Length: 146
Image (cartoon, rainbow, N blue to C red; front, side, top):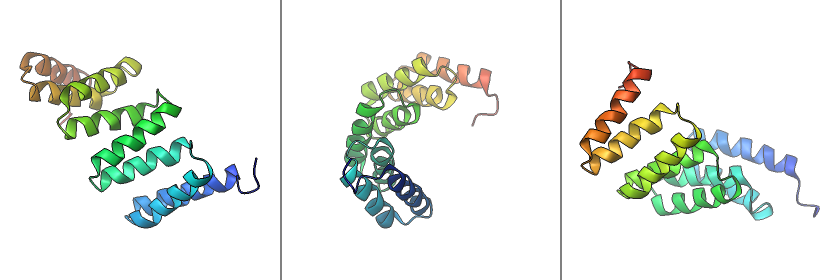
């Protein structure tokens, strides 16, 4: 390990970046995520959270690229997989989004928000009966889902 590669310092920087990110100080959060990545280029949290920051900025391509890089490190991270599928849905890449939600549900069958969004994708694809089935399954588990 090189002297400037301190995992504990990176963890503190990630915590600080998350606090800045949550308070809306995106530029400052980005600087900290980038600083961590300059030392640890395969840092899952830094890649994923920087991807989420880009998503908040509506930079879908950058967000997708960063989340994809994070998923190369941790390919079964449920939140990253869900957020990736959501980006694909938001950019009307419905076939890919559907595969993404299917993967999330294969890993976590009780993820009702993924099932609901899967229904939205199917509806957008004019596959109404399948969409209706998704919505019914969501309501069976979570009757108050709006």
